[in-house]
Length: 204
Length: 373
Image (cartoon, rainbow over all chains, first blue to last red; front, side, top):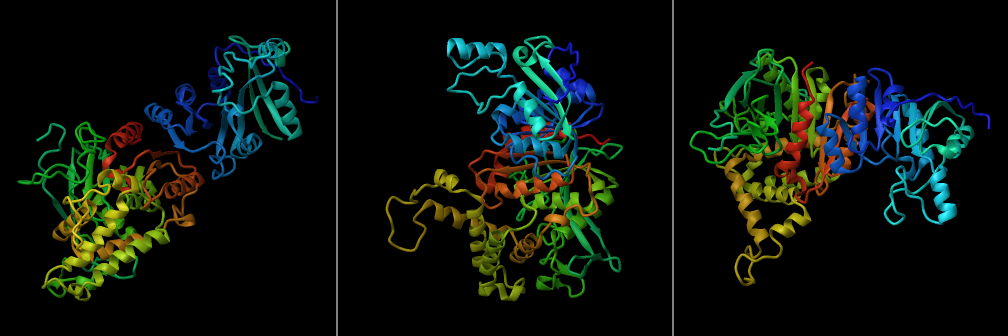
């Protein structure tokens, strides 16, 4: 593995705070699958970011508009196509990677539309899901993966190692990475001990 | 009178383009003088930064809210305009003008041609959506409003909102096109052509010069019936009429057995009393000519600061969702910050006049974050 992993000390409470720290003041930000807009509202408030959300769920979208966000109804796969290259400083794919069908296409499109892409996902190789699967023989359920098999919206599972391999294969540059435990950053063997991962990636 | 009503309103008239400074139209012809009938609700603030222009649809008029003296029926969007409503007249100054080519006080084919002293009839020049917006722009200039806070409208009103954004992006802060399109599709043109043919096939139309004899009532009524079918949805018609009969038994005659037939006849013949047949021809043609697709939209603008709220309705088959999505796609290319909702409704195209709760929630919250600076 040739990707140089530069461990960054993090001491924030949540991935939202980390993302707020990553983006610059007044940045143009697109959040794919923005949900009820909690993150975007936070970025608008903390960093005066100019924000655009894309979401499918009408109720969540209403909440976005109530928060003063611009949000458009669309699915993640087709949401980026019409934006010109480098339209946004950051495209955020937070906690949606496990739910999208054409993950590679969406990442590539995000890298085209955004100068940088922030990808956040639950790490399936975390010790707890590993343990659950191997020793209890059950589909893992935890804070990062809180669903039973019969109701989960997740269609894929990926690990920190998987994502790093992917970036290497697709010649994507990993600029920053953050590994998060339940409440604290993880520095030692993240693929085993991090529940969530957050990467800042860009085209090489 | 309800507390949330703007109350009794009086139509106003603004005349411009007096010869020789007549208005240059898209067709190459000129028109003037032009009178616009308009109404305004709320108070224009000192800096003139709180004005919202409401644009009406095909058969609409300037009477968008409140009541006329001695009249019991409210304006066509009264549910949306008033104190505390979506377009809150405690906050905004809301203006609505009848389009040129119309027949509700603005200059149109039924107006007197100053050169002949008779109604223009078909001597009236063909007008376009851009011409309508140009006339509205003169009205906004007359008010001394440099920048409109928002231009909003449904259907043909939405076309005007798009036209405003395209022609005068520097003069609006936000635009709300509802249940509309960047261009009429062949299906939409086809419906309009059948509508026009039904008017023109009536011998009473007399080549358009019918004003001394009265309206081509039968043709215009049929035209409006066609319109009403396209405004509803399969589901809303099922819910409203099903196969209910007007009387208990089938008549076995060519009369209106079914409630839906009665409804269409009632709507058709009522329309004849309030709308000029030639205006229907001119305005449907203006909608058919409308095309802001591709490079024609905001031609000089690479990146726009205009904020958009685009709304479509899932059961609207006259202006289907994909046409609004096309607007959104174009806005993405212009880097526009856009809010887009495809609202759930069973009312078809009529939804923009009926789905008040959802529209109010959305528009109110959207406007709350649109500021003049």
